Structures are given as structure tokens and as C-alpha cells.
Length: 340
Image (cartoon, rainbow, N blue to C red; front, top):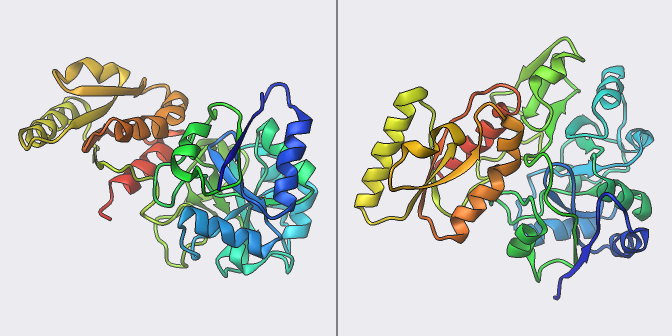
């Protein structure tokens, strides 16, 4: 299969090109497209055969549910059996934006989208290309990240080509994504509301809108959310996350780097700007300032992918503070560093 690439300027939407991509969606084909978080691999969410192609192309297990992307809040009432007031309150506060709501699904939604669960994950992306594509396709679009399952998420069209080129019909190139980590996923079917996946909307921001929110630590009820499997976000290289603070963190990273270099391995360090000059004679890639977590989030996956492209065998990453977007970054780094 030859993958066609359409370049579209998100600040000046070419509707003729959007309609070409929308026709592919209508035909049950796979179209990768940018959102504000990462690139998504989209199909008609109401076409079961098309949805199955996502799992095949990504080599994704069928027990990992998908997110249905919408362009109109009214679509919630088609996809969901019930829409509680708190869901509307959250949608009005954060949509379009990087927030996914888990609600009881309607009969319209196939079990292949929800991994057999009685809930469906829905969000409205804050990206002009994504919204235009959904509107022109005239259907909700199911779209996990446009990468091979378990690998780091794509934040540029080239990342999608690297993983899925020749496996999907089309990629819309809309430049680098802004947020860089996936959406926050909230289960609003429970009380208190639970964060199933940290993401582009911080817990601090959520608490400004709703009184109580619980961060889920267990997977007792199965995978109710996309991104809960531990094999997500992994580079090809072995990733080691060092969560010590201050000088102790730097010393531990130096020790580990020396150990693996002595074994003849190619070692790289992902560090904050503040610490980049503390690792003599070791390759360092800067994720951003430790105080500028939005920039760190936007750079995270691209840096991990660049280590892989350059043949690094060991990546040692500095841990970041777990507030605001730091929680989402650390969740992904922990999963990337987890034993496979």
C-alpha cells in the first residue's frame, strides 16, 4: 500500500484537501491526522470493519478501548446512554481540548470501539484540521495515537510515516502538535470522578471546575481507558527513569551512565535545561526547563524517538515534579521504563 500525504496548514484550512481525507474516512479507510495532543489514526467510529483495521495496522490488542472524537457537543447524546450534568460542565469548560470523558455507551457504539465495556471514551479535539475532518466526514472518528502499539506516540507526520508508512491509506501533515502528550481521561460514571489517565488537562485545572476528583492507582475494573496498558510509550532503547531529587538525581544518573558506557553501550541522557551541563562527555538531549512543563510535554515523545533514530541503547531520564503537566509526563516515563 502506498500512503498518501496531504499537507494542510492548520491556520488556513484547505477544505478541498480535508474533503479528500473525509472521503477516505467515509470509505472505511485509515487516515492519520494531527490533534493538539498527538497524531491520531482515524476511522469512522460507527463502521465496525473500519475500526478493526486500526487494531491490525497498529498491532494493538483488542482489549484496549478507543476514543471517539466529535466536533459537536450534541454528539454526546448519540454516543452515550446518559450525559450527567457534570459531564456537560466539564465539556463546556474544556472542549475543544485535551480532555476525554468516559460515559455509559449507547447502542450505536460497537463493542469493538469500547473493548467490550459498557462505557465509551469521547473527546472534542482543539485542532482545526481534526475538527474540519470530523465535520466533513459527518461521523464521529475513532482515533488512537497513530503509532505502532507500545511505541512512543507521534507528534509529527514523519513519526507516523516511520511507524505506519505503507500500512495506512493517508496521513494529513499539519505540522508538530502543540500539547505533545495525550488527553486526560476522566471516568464520570463514578463518584468521585476518577482520572484514569493523566494528560493535557492537569488535575489542578480540573479541580477549578469540579470539587472532587480521584487519581486512579489501580486497574481493578480492567482497562476502562485508552493508555492504561503498561507497554505504552516505549522507545526501542532501554529507558531508565531516575526519580531522585537535586544533586542526588544527577549523581545517580552519572553513576548509571558510567556503568552502561563501561559495558560498551551507547548511552544518552534526557535532562532539563538546568542540568544539561552536569553530565560531562555524555550525550544529553534537553527536554526543556524543569519549570516549563508545557514545553517539556511537547518535546517528550520527539526526544525519545530521536534517541532511537540515532541508535542509542540506553536512555536515562530525569524525573520531573509531579504537578500540572508533570504528572502526565511522569506517568508516561514510568510506563516507558516499566519491565516489558
